[in-house]
Length: 156
Ligand code: HEM
Image (tube, rainbow, N blue to C red; front, side):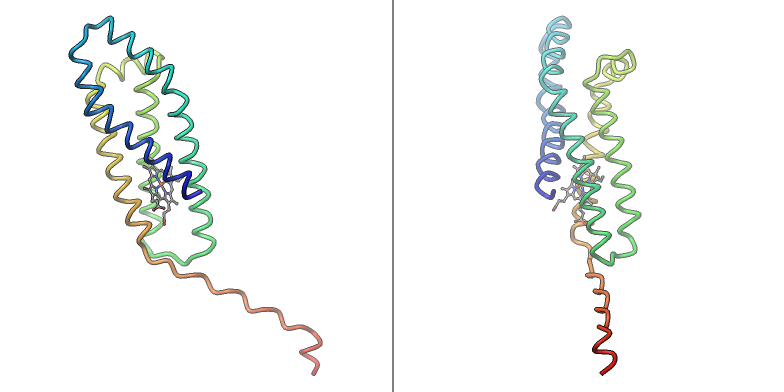
């Protein structure tokens, strides 16, 4: 699950940075018709990896969170910080889906592609910084329940 989370996080963050600093500036050098064609071609290939990476992040992230809660006593700030990370991640997922979608609402979003990609880059950096703090936070193993005393041992 840790591997699944890291693979999906690398894909999500790497593709956001690529789109902002390589793809977006390159779009300026082609005409509107070619831009629309390119958008269609990218959409057809990227929609599945995007949805897979969101699913992996949610499933592995929630699983890891439940295992960590079960196993460790956490620092006071852990839960609020995790909550902030979770909300930021939902915002990133929403924006990423709008940027690739074909609904009327998504097309409105895409008119401000630069703005929303900038927002996603900033959110992504925040998420990665928060994740590092969560990872490094002090986690104290919860004490084992004392073993039940066997009835025979009690009598002797
Ligand atoms: C854009 C989305 C996300 C990115 C880029 C991201 C990135 C990361 C990174 C880099 C780590 C540290 C990995 C490690 O060292 O093992 C991490 C840990 C973690 N992430 Fe995410 N994550 C994202 C979304 C989510 C979501 C949606 C959840 C919950 C549903 C989640 C829950 C967690 C948990 C519980 C940890 C372990 C923290 C700890 O070690 O205490 N993440 N994430």
